[in-house]
View (tube, each protein chain N blue to C red):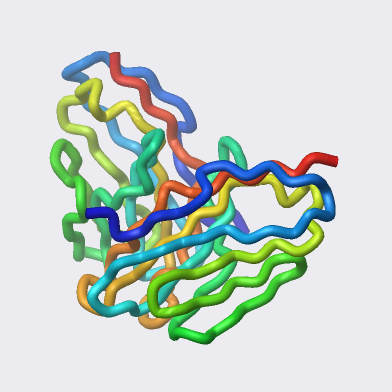
Length: 111
Length: 114
């Protein structure tokens, strides 16, 4: 059973066209939810940590939010340099040494 | 700061050969881990270590060995390579405690097993 599901798989936006990426999760007890950005041929780069429902984090054009069942990564007025794959991962209260990653959303921002 | 350094970046092996992927970090992180990334699948944990001399298995440990003799280094050994081990391998490190999930990744090692 998948613990982390991301949607959509791919998203194409015009520059300036805001949208949201979804990460739904099923874990018995959430220790933390993490967003990463991955550029082609590179390792993932950490963006945000969310610990509890209702929490929000922002960085430039990105804002991450968390509910009890899902997280959203909102992208406001994206630029071409925001093009990347965005990965979501969850860490359970038990077995905290492992992160369970989703398959990612591949975002393309067209100038 | 170099961060997390992985070598080699690319490797081609024949079935049955063995090799070691190297990983070093210069951030004094106690936690180090190896993930593999395959198309259509999320990153999956192979092995991890919470400190020198301590290692443990992740989700997909079969066919791989690790050791941690120093804080800085965490090599991954493929004992007898199989085509199913064709993948991109990432080493990652982090602080312990509440920030364990904030991983710093290397740039990856792309392995092809023929």
